[in-house]
Image 1 (spheres, protein in one colour):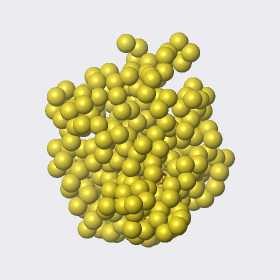
Image 2: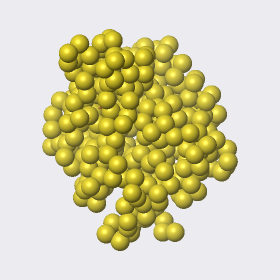
Image 3: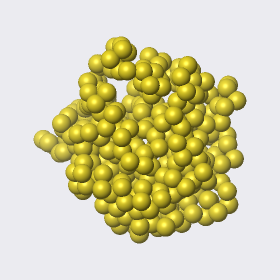
Image 4: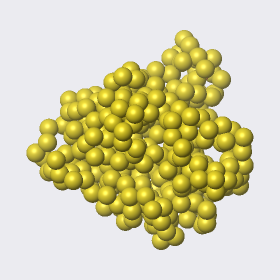
Amino acid sequence: MLAMIKRQLGQTGLEVTELCFGALPFGPLQKNVDVVTCTEIVIKALESGINFIDTAQMYLTYEPIKRAMKATGIRPILATKSTASDYDSMQKAIDEALLLLDVDYIDIFHLHAARANDKVFEERKGAWQCLKDNKAKGRIKAIGMSTHSVLATRAAAQNQDLDVIFPIININGTGILHGNREDMLEAIDSCVKAGKGLYIMKALGGGSLIDQYDEAMTFARSINGSASVALGMVNPEELDFNLKYFEGRDAKTLSMPSTRGNKKRFIAVKYICNNCGKCRTACPNEAIIEKEGVSFIDDSKCLTCGYCVGACDLFGIRMI
Ligand code: SF4
Ligand code: SF4
């Protein structure tokens, strides 16, 4: 096995592998793989040398991560996040993460703020204060923000308390809010210059760039100051492929797992939808519109993140 590159994450003192295990897609919001299989995939990731896992309160994937840590005795660097906006809800989210992951501290805790703008720290000041207080108590080692927004990324560069930024960026600029790819690169660069740790999400545009894997990944890996790329992996074949690629194998010599060709798609089921609008509020990319009295998902804008799935009380959003 070739060694995977590790990099310092800004000034956090954390040294992360260049490949970060993204724990969204195998969970209930997307592929909904059973917990035993998810645990096996995380075990394999840890035993193969990945030392960095990114999850979220919303992803509902703490259990397989906890089981994999127990099975291997390996404690990776853990990043999680919450959409909480006030102090008490953020405190509950932190307590829940510590309990369900069965750890004494979380390495990185983010404001989960996909759709936020430059007012994010003002609008969610209670939640932000809570993150700072928990960091002061040692329950969190670093605090940050995950975002799709150029405006929020620019605001992050100015925030003295923020340690880590986790923005969306990819070769096509897919999913970026409040600006384009160049705007986001510029905002990211101001974060790096301000000493923030940087790792990136959606380098494959939520799956839409899978046919340009090598090109998309070369772009993502060349972003100045980026310590790691978070990639969701839903089966051992995808994990193997990414490991080999990040360990330096030429993509042309690797065979793409067959599942990579299966483009996933989300739909709002017409006969279930009562048009409450919660999915439209939850969608980070304004991909859901109201059409003929129900919600309708525009595939051309959908990032296949699955956030709308958890927002619908009627289980009216399905992946097909
Ligand atoms: S959240 Fe569910 S019920 Fe509400 S509009 Fe969306 S699909 Fe329809
Ligand atoms: S419709 Fe929006 S929330 Fe749902 S999967 Fe697509 S981008 Fe994500």
